[in-house]
Image (cartoon, rainbow, N blue to C red; front, side):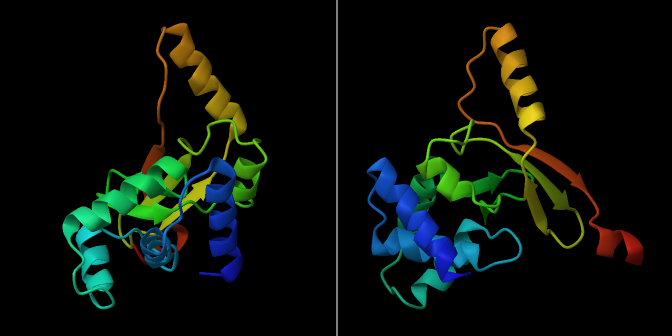
Length: 157
């Protein structure tokens, strides 16, 4: 994880008036440094190496904060968490330019290596939002997960 990523996350929290505490920062860093999504108990094990008194509730509260802040995504298919990786995503949150306020996006999840690739498709996101409104439905969160094989895994198959 780059220092820029952590600084961007801190700026986002500051702009939203959110407390990016050392614990939240540490959990975010543990997630952001991984290439693949990480489960809550794996995070707990890694956190205990530095904070002996860490408990499941500690991790889950930090994860809840990071999700609400739009810094991470929960990948339901894997029951794991991944850092939001859309280019300049956090800076666009700070400047109010992100349409879905961090509660949406599109991810490709490899069934084999579990690698997650995140991207934005504003046209598709607007279409989903319009469809929801047409059905008198107010979205609170949407993350479209597309499962399959990434290029390297497909080549090996």
